[in-house]
Length: 221
Length: 206
Image: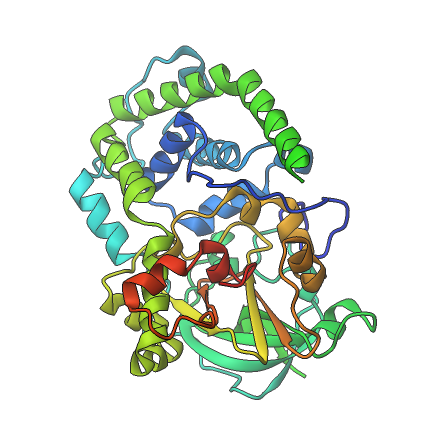
């Protein structure tokens, strides 16, 4: 999706401003949004491959005017409303209606189970997948695709030549999962791009930018 | 600089005050609805907040770094298979399932970003600071890393190769900073106290 979230290489955003002794949260509602986004997927199966497209489809002017957890709240609401588990009426009135039949949900996760699951993590690694097409040292060219759906290949690195430096093994493919086409597990590789390949001759070719790219993002160069 | 920071902070406070009651009410209403529907348990929400507000944070990563500085076999394992080596110190899990640790040396300086969103190694660094998720950092550090680092107070010598890691996939990155000079006599706990979050992102030296 070629929209505002994919901001690598944009001008005009100004200086990076750090806050001294910053706390993880800046308001109580941020705590609750973070916890809701963490707890809800135990009851309503979705993962980052659903949450991120939901964030990315927020119109760019609203994306930029929102704080981080406002984006999470809007994306979460969109997912729940989209699955029929929550309605705008309920949010407006504060009155809950019974859950619709036929939508797969699980009971609310308990504290101990949530913490145990978070400590284990939710690995994207899979035992098997598409055969690997590349190996360390191979030169690759990234695809020149502009899907209207979720992709992990940023705009600034499309149709660029890099070198595979590491094979991370087989993982679920977020681009496919994010558009509802299943996990399509495949190899993920660290790919090094000289800075001047990405940004032109004014950039320092000796400096490198690394991306982790799935097999389907790459052509042999 | 202090004036600029103050102005930003006032601006943010104003923004927050203006929008606060509305969003607090909306979030509270949403939580209440989801509790009534049986989809979330408020005690689980409390536990999740407590975990990431008080238990998981950059002190974890600092212990990993201090161990690597004092134990060369551990450092080798950390650079070879960071997920397993970090597990040895009992850290791991969500947003750290596949860890990679990259080492700063006189020849190479590493810095981490997530241009598409906010990917960050929670088990070792906690939740990301606002600046890491902000448009200025995400947009600029991939194209002008030396300029951004210089603005943040870190000048990378011309003779040092700069490596920017855009964590766009399911790998999460932590920088192993260089051990400061003059710390030869310090033991692991004292070394860990020197390690900063920004050093482990790569935007500061330790």
